[in-house]
Amino acid sequence: MKLKTIFLLLIFVVFSCNDKNEVSLVCGVENPIEELAFLNEIKNNIDRIDCAGKSAIIQYIYKSEIVFEVNICDQIADGQTSVYNCSGEVVCTFGGIAGVNTCPDFDKLRTDKIILYGN
Image 1 (spheres, rainbow, N blue to C red):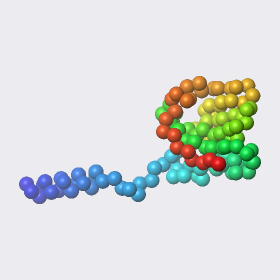
Image 2: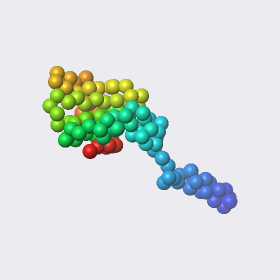
Image 3: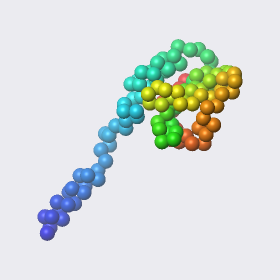
Image 4: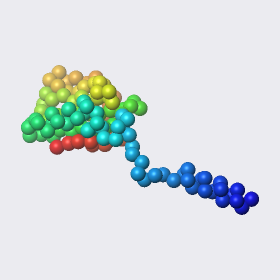
């Protein structure tokens, strides 16, 4: 009986331990800014633009999907913010000279903010 109890305890410990070296994958990659081509291109464009303002790539969960909000030169009055999914497809757009807002619920439903890149 003692051997069975020790064996069960050992199995419990082995399967309940969380490896601290686990890597969290986003869109199937470890580093979305470097490994997702469309985000890497956006980051490189941000680095080349001198708009004297803030630019950022922010990761969120929106409607159970990982998305990336891209703000380039956010202080420009007619600037536009785009939200992309993991495939690089535009999910939402905001702003611009026409005041576009294709996802009016984005601010309310987005969660788990992670700033991936900014200047």
